[in-house]
Length: 425
Image (cartoon, rainbow, N blue to C red; front, side):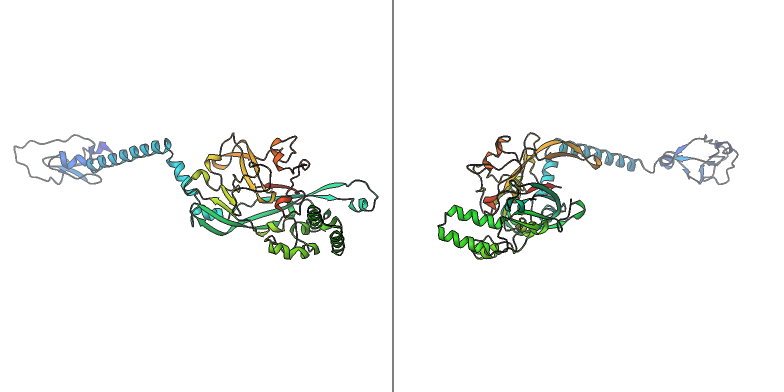
């Protein structure tokens, strides 16, 4: 507003008449706060873009108005903002100095039926990579024919498969949860060294070795041994080693010895595959039934394995520590286990045992999220001379060489050693 022109403006519309002896009231040039015009200047009206006039004034003013419509509204707004700030401050202090946040997060992690945590647990979106190494006995035929004295072993692979997991046949038992796993393995040729379908390897004839091992244990008489040898020679794989494509050896191939044994296996409840393969029982719905703690009553037991096939411990090894099921499946760990000084344990049914993972270091991912990285110790598959903790995984009289686990007891007696596995997420 140009204040220099205010005095040159003539008054043409006085609001009240004036008498002859009445003194002229002169209003000085001022800035008038809008919410005080009518309240404090009697007989005055108008503000903003309109003309400002007062009774008895000779001149008409154009006035710049400022301020708020109402002090009452102003004070109410200040009070509301102050109350909001105080409540926010109290809430922040309350959440930061109590376990309220942790309790709220952990409560949402409990595996309840139809909850978000349950849906994520039932069908995990992360697909672990299974990398399989095999030992190829390259000169088996020469050893059989007497041309070589020792077997030459070649490490082939890794042959890589992505594992998709789904939990099926789920039963809630109070704060426990029983289920089976349904695995779908997808071959990943671009990550594989070689080809699982075209690479052929000489590998031990596991069904034959299993039958012979059982026959030795029961100490058959001469006649029975002769009849067994005659029957085995009529099978499609009569030698101690067979040559197969890697994919067939892992996921199934036709074998006469298994066909003969199927009635016995069916009666004992161990027939859970159509064709014999090293990993045939791991593809599809696994027969093993696990029971875990949901964490409903004890969050420190969340996802901890309670039973395997109705038993609260394994029966394969020589000590309670090695037979322990105190582990998770690796998807969820309760907060009590997240201690940098203590290892985490993950149970691997394929290896008939749990494996330790030790804290390595803190890392940071996108958006500044802090994580703890764990890794498997390098000596986890060492012999007892190098790793005393592995003494209970040995047989009574001998231990397998470094890097090998004897899984005979939990694999129907057909395996003398496991292949080399590595898992990555």
